Length: 134
Image (cartoon, rainbow, N blue to C red; front, side, top):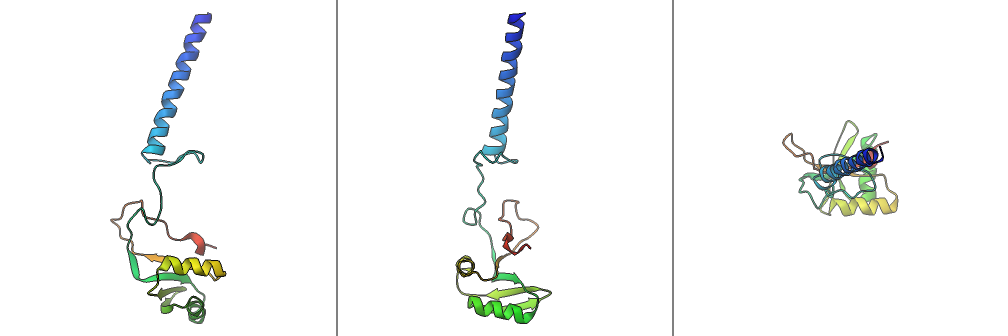
């Protein structure tokens, strides 16, 4: 009876180790699914790691009125390109990420990068800036 219990316990430990090793390889090293927060993931979602195309008007923001959008442009020192249905597009010659970072430091209302997206893009593209969510 003792030998049979030892065999069952050993088999259970081996099967558990194989399952965990397979899970770790699939999710963390190959990046095909979610990983536990305490394990490092192989895939990094960083704007520099994945090439993306930014629109000619590289910044956008939510604004209630065109006047509010114009005030936001004056705060940031950028040009209001267009305003339609609550979305303002801004043009600037500066790096859009630096403009957003500077505004964030000064406590200005948030801007987002205006990425160009197509139906053929891979899933690994960075998500839109989530700071505009209310």
